[in-house]
Structures are given as C-alpha cells and as structure tokens.
Length: 282
Image (cartoon, rainbow, N blue to C red):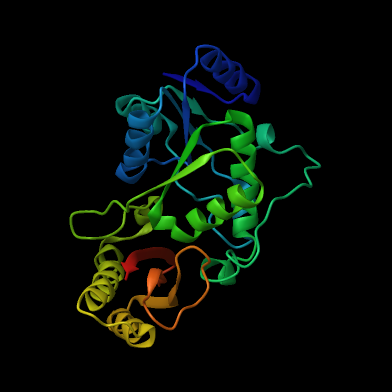
C-alpha cells in the first residue's frame, strides 16, 4: 500500500491501473478511521480491483465556530487500518494541495441539502459537494463508497452525481454501531465517560422509532413525538432536530410510506452527534 499527498501522483497511479484494465473504488474519508470506515473499505475491496482511500480533513465543510482545529487526526493508525483492510493507495493531501490561495469555485445542491443538517450548517454541504467532486475528478473511480450514518450526505452526493452526469456508481453502506448501540463516529472521542453513556439516548430513540414502524405505525408525528420524548428524558441531551423525510429528496413527510429516513441530530454536552434509520414501507 502507498500513501501520497500529491494529486499528480494519484493520477499517475490510477492511469497505470487503467492501462491494465483494472476497476477502481474510492472511499472518501476525513481520517481518524474506525470500524465504520473499515466496512466501507472492505466493501470497496470486494467490488473493485484497486481501492483508493482519501484521508483529508476538508476545511471548507466546517463552519466558522465548528471543530476544524480540534477534529481528531491519526494518520499512522489510519495507515494500519487501510493496509489491513486491503486498500492500495491513501491520498492524504494538505489543504494547500486541494485549494489554491484564491480558490473560488464551489459545487452545491439545493433542496436536498436545505433541511436537516443543512439548517444548522448552511455551508456544510457546499463544502462536501466541492471536495467530493474534486476527489472524483482526481481519482476518476468506477464506484465511491459512503456510510448511511451520514444519510443526508449520501443523498446529496447521489443528487450531485445524477444532476452533473458523473459516470460513477455511488454505493451506500450500513451504519456500524458499538456493541451498546451507539453509531460509530470520529466525534465519539470528544465524549467524557458520563457523556458517552448519555449518548446512548440517540440509538434508543432510533430503535424505538424503527420498532413503531415495524409494529404498523405510519403517522410521522406520532413516531417523532415518541423519539423526542426519549431524548428529552436525558438531561445531557439537547435536540437539534428529529425529523422524518423522504430518503431520496430529504423533503418532510407526514406518513411513513415508501422509502423514508428518520434522522436525528443531538448535542451531548458540546458534541453534536447524528443517527438515523431508513425504512422501506409498502
């Protein structure tokens, strides 16, 4: 496995693979990799001849008061995980390699990025779409892999690829959880022991909402009210949003019909965590 911070080197390597007729998968990450990321790499390795993992904390998807400077980083641990999973190349650029000093071109979607996380992080998905489109242009993968934990991000990227006619298959992969149910996240490291315990309220709310749909409830208002009551019972928890939307358009729904996404964002102390479930209701 190789590691490079050079766009030119990534393109050179991918060009060599293409000459050999090999397929290429891309796993875009912000580093500090965990088992959730590994599941994406495992899937990419299974479905492609070669796999590139991008490991880049993208500054333009962080807001002015967000955690760019403190976002966890550990490239040595990331290298070990990628190598064990069978990745072929890690792209680990510096911000200066990705963005010129006078960088002024951005990619953004509308509607699908406006709700949920887009409400409280209005520039976030513009940063995501811009860096992902740059990564797609650099690597030119056949497939790119994203986790369902960031379900709105997955929907936004799919919409961007569709609207801009990008010839890339977007593969969504299931949420990976800790044994106690908490969704894997690099931000979990911010939690102290009492906050870590309190954070379990997210998965409890998610599992409860999912169970209500399985038991036949279809009224979004009733499902969301029950989920909110579970979160409100935890003193350390502060709700950002608890919503049910169409899983593809991210527009609010009144009933759990078709393919729906129930998504939550909750502050535990100062740490903002997200979780969700997708239900196929016929």
